[in-house]
Length: 182
Ligand code: 5GP
Ligand code: MG
Image 1 (tube, rainbow, N blue to C red):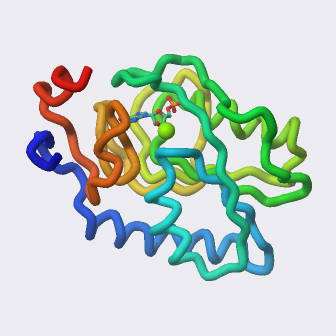
Image 2 (image 1 turned 45 degrees about the vertical axis):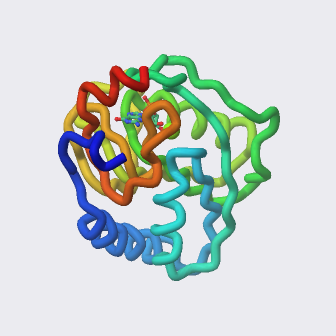
Protein backbone atom coordinates (compact mmCIF):
# COMPACT_ATOMS: atom_id res chain seq x y z
CA UNK A 1 0.00 0.00 0.00
CA UNK A 2 2.65 2.56 1.05
CA UNK A 3 4.80 1.44 -1.91
CA UNK A 4 2.15 2.79 -4.28
CA UNK A 5 2.57 6.33 -2.95
CA UNK A 6 4.77 8.68 -4.95
CA UNK A 7 4.92 11.34 -2.23
CA UNK A 8 3.12 12.38 0.95
CA UNK A 9 1.36 15.74 0.78
CA UNK A 10 0.09 15.97 4.37
CA UNK A 11 1.34 13.70 7.13
CA UNK A 12 -0.80 12.44 9.99
CA UNK A 13 0.54 14.86 12.62
CA UNK A 14 -0.08 17.84 10.35
CA UNK A 15 -3.66 16.71 9.68
CA UNK A 16 -4.48 16.07 13.33
CA UNK A 17 -3.05 19.40 14.46
CA UNK A 18 -5.24 21.16 11.91
CA UNK A 19 -8.29 19.23 13.13
CA UNK A 20 -7.70 20.69 16.62
CA UNK A 21 -8.17 24.16 15.13
CA UNK A 22 -11.19 23.24 13.02
CA UNK A 23 -12.88 21.60 16.01
CA UNK A 24 -12.25 24.71 18.11
CA UNK A 25 -13.92 26.86 15.42
CA UNK A 26 -16.97 24.56 15.25
CA UNK A 27 -17.24 24.39 19.04
CA UNK A 28 -17.18 28.20 19.22
CA UNK A 29 -19.61 28.78 16.31
CA UNK A 30 -22.25 26.32 17.58
CA UNK A 31 -22.04 27.09 21.29
CA UNK A 32 -25.51 26.69 22.86
CA UNK A 33 -26.82 24.71 19.86
CA UNK A 34 -26.77 21.04 18.97
CA UNK A 35 -25.62 20.66 15.35
CA UNK A 36 -26.41 17.63 13.21
CA UNK A 37 -23.28 16.39 11.47
CA UNK A 38 -23.96 14.66 8.17
CA UNK A 39 -20.99 12.65 6.93
CA UNK A 40 -20.75 11.91 3.22
CA UNK A 41 -19.84 8.24 2.79
CA UNK A 42 -17.33 6.81 2.34
CA UNK A 43 -14.80 9.61 1.92
CA UNK A 44 -15.76 11.55 5.06
CA UNK A 45 -15.55 8.74 7.61
CA UNK A 46 -11.97 9.16 8.79
CA UNK A 47 -12.39 12.94 9.04
CA UNK A 48 -15.64 12.47 10.95
CA UNK A 49 -14.09 10.13 13.50
CA UNK A 50 -11.04 12.30 14.17
CA UNK A 51 -12.76 15.71 13.98
CA UNK A 52 -15.86 14.98 16.04
CA UNK A 53 -13.87 13.59 18.94
CA UNK A 54 -12.34 17.05 19.23
CA UNK A 55 -15.66 18.97 19.12
CA UNK A 56 -16.90 19.79 22.61
CA UNK A 57 -20.64 20.07 21.97
CA UNK A 58 -23.68 17.85 22.15
CA UNK A 59 -24.31 16.78 18.54
CA UNK A 60 -26.15 14.29 16.34
CA UNK A 61 -24.59 12.19 13.57
CA UNK A 62 -26.17 11.16 10.28
CA UNK A 63 -24.67 9.80 7.07
CA UNK A 64 -25.51 10.09 3.39
CA UNK A 65 -24.17 7.96 0.58
CA UNK A 66 -23.47 9.52 -2.81
CA UNK A 67 -20.94 9.00 -5.55
CA UNK A 68 -19.51 11.20 -8.24
CA UNK A 69 -16.29 9.52 -9.37
CA UNK A 70 -17.50 6.07 -10.38
CA UNK A 71 -13.99 4.61 -10.15
CA UNK A 72 -11.77 6.97 -12.12
CA UNK A 73 -9.56 9.91 -11.22
CA UNK A 74 -11.89 12.57 -12.70
CA UNK A 75 -15.29 13.64 -11.39
CA UNK A 76 -18.01 12.19 -13.63
CA UNK A 77 -20.23 15.24 -13.18
CA UNK A 78 -23.18 13.04 -12.21
CA UNK A 79 -24.10 12.85 -8.51
CA UNK A 80 -25.84 9.60 -7.61
CA UNK A 81 -27.75 9.41 -4.31
CA UNK A 82 -27.63 5.83 -3.07
CA UNK A 83 -30.65 5.95 -0.79
CA UNK A 84 -34.20 7.10 -1.52
CA UNK A 85 -34.86 9.33 1.47
CA UNK A 86 -32.90 12.03 3.24
CA UNK A 87 -32.07 12.07 6.97
CA UNK A 88 -34.58 13.85 9.22
CA UNK A 89 -33.14 17.38 9.23
CA UNK A 90 -36.24 19.53 9.71
CA UNK A 91 -35.27 22.67 11.64
CA UNK A 92 -31.77 21.28 12.29
CA UNK A 93 -28.46 23.12 12.04
CA UNK A 94 -26.48 20.89 9.72
CA UNK A 95 -22.74 20.61 9.16
CA UNK A 96 -22.05 18.59 6.04
CA UNK A 97 -18.69 16.80 6.19
CA UNK A 98 -16.76 15.63 3.16
CA UNK A 99 -13.21 14.66 2.40
CA UNK A 100 -12.61 17.12 -0.43
CA UNK A 101 -14.15 20.01 -2.34
CA UNK A 102 -13.29 19.51 -6.01
CA UNK A 103 -15.79 20.61 -8.69
CA UNK A 104 -18.32 21.52 -5.99
CA UNK A 105 -21.07 19.41 -7.57
CA UNK A 106 -21.44 16.99 -4.66
CA UNK A 107 -21.73 19.58 -1.91
CA UNK A 108 -23.96 21.84 -4.03
CA UNK A 109 -26.39 18.99 -4.82
CA UNK A 110 -26.59 17.75 -1.24
CA UNK A 111 -26.87 21.12 0.47
CA UNK A 112 -29.63 22.17 -1.95
CA UNK A 113 -31.65 19.05 -1.12
CA UNK A 114 -31.05 19.50 2.62
CA UNK A 115 -32.40 23.05 2.52
CA UNK A 116 -35.19 22.70 -0.06
CA UNK A 117 -36.46 19.16 0.60
CA UNK A 118 -35.41 18.27 4.13
CA UNK A 119 -36.07 21.73 5.64
CA UNK A 120 -32.76 22.18 7.45
CA UNK A 121 -32.56 25.48 9.36
CA UNK A 122 -28.97 26.03 8.19
CA UNK A 123 -26.32 24.08 6.29
CA UNK A 124 -22.59 24.69 6.64
CA UNK A 125 -19.89 22.82 4.75
CA UNK A 126 -16.75 21.32 6.26
CA UNK A 127 -14.02 19.65 4.20
CA UNK A 128 -10.55 18.41 4.98
CA UNK A 129 -9.22 19.45 1.57
CA UNK A 130 -10.14 22.13 -0.95
CA UNK A 131 -8.67 22.03 -4.44
CA UNK A 132 -7.63 25.44 -5.67
CA UNK A 133 -9.28 25.66 -9.10
CA UNK A 134 -12.29 27.06 -10.97
CA UNK A 135 -15.34 25.09 -9.84
CA UNK A 136 -18.25 23.83 -11.93
CA UNK A 137 -20.55 24.88 -9.04
CA UNK A 138 -19.99 27.98 -6.94
CA UNK A 139 -19.68 26.43 -3.48
CA UNK A 140 -18.00 28.03 -0.47
CA UNK A 141 -16.82 25.77 2.33
CA UNK A 142 -17.21 27.19 5.85
CA UNK A 143 -14.52 25.01 7.47
CA UNK A 144 -11.47 23.95 5.44
CA UNK A 145 -8.50 21.90 6.58
CA UNK A 146 -6.05 22.56 3.76
CA UNK A 147 -5.96 24.07 0.28
CA UNK A 148 -4.19 21.80 -2.22
CA UNK A 149 -3.36 21.92 -5.92
CA UNK A 150 -5.59 20.35 -8.57
CA UNK A 151 -4.18 16.82 -8.44
CA UNK A 152 -5.64 13.44 -7.52
CA UNK A 153 -4.89 12.44 -3.92
CA UNK A 154 -5.62 9.39 -1.76
CA UNK A 155 -5.58 8.46 1.91
CA UNK A 156 -7.31 9.65 5.07
CA UNK A 157 -10.69 8.59 3.64
CA UNK A 158 -9.98 9.28 -0.02
CA UNK A 159 -9.86 6.24 -2.30
CA UNK A 160 -8.73 5.06 -5.67
CA UNK A 161 -10.82 2.11 -6.88
CA UNK A 162 -12.01 1.66 -3.29
CA UNK A 163 -8.50 1.31 -1.86
CA UNK A 164 -6.15 3.52 0.19
CA UNK A 165 -8.83 5.08 2.43
CA UNK A 166 -7.04 3.75 5.52
CA UNK A 167 -3.71 5.47 4.81
CA UNK A 168 -3.17 7.82 7.77
CA UNK A 169 -1.81 10.56 5.48
CA UNK A 170 -2.77 12.30 2.23
CA UNK A 171 -0.57 11.25 -0.67
CA UNK A 172 -0.23 11.16 -4.43
CA UNK A 173 -0.23 7.78 -6.20
CA UNK A 174 2.54 6.62 -8.49
CA UNK A 175 1.39 6.55 -12.12
CA UNK A 176 2.05 2.79 -12.23
CA UNK A 177 -0.35 2.21 -9.30
CA UNK A 178 -3.04 4.16 -11.14
CA UNK A 179 -2.64 2.14 -14.31
CA UNK A 180 -2.33 -1.18 -12.45
CA UNK A 181 -5.70 -0.70 -10.72
CA UNK A 182 -7.51 1.08 -13.58
P1 5GP B 1 -16.91 17.23 -6.41
O1 5GP B 1 -18.36 16.94 -6.48
O2 5GP B 1 -16.56 18.42 -5.53
O3 5GP B 1 -16.27 17.28 -7.75
O4 5GP B 1 -16.21 15.96 -5.85
C1 5GP B 1 -16.25 15.58 -4.58
C2 5GP B 1 -15.97 14.10 -4.49
O5 5GP B 1 -15.10 13.61 -5.51
C3 5GP B 1 -15.27 13.87 -3.19
O6 5GP B 1 -16.21 13.55 -2.20
C4 5GP B 1 -14.36 12.71 -3.51
O7 5GP B 1 -15.04 11.51 -3.27
C5 5GP B 1 -14.10 12.80 -4.97
N1 5GP B 1 -12.79 13.42 -5.23
C6 5GP B 1 -12.53 14.67 -5.67
N2 5GP B 1 -11.22 14.90 -5.79
C7 5GP B 1 -10.60 13.77 -5.39
C8 5GP B 1 -9.22 13.37 -5.26
O8 5GP B 1 -8.25 14.09 -5.52
N3 5GP B 1 -9.00 12.10 -4.83
C9 5GP B 1 -10.01 11.23 -4.52
N4 5GP B 1 -9.66 10.03 -4.09
N5 5GP B 1 -11.32 11.57 -4.62
C10 5GP B 1 -11.60 12.82 -5.05
MG1 MG C 1 -16.41 11.09 -1.79
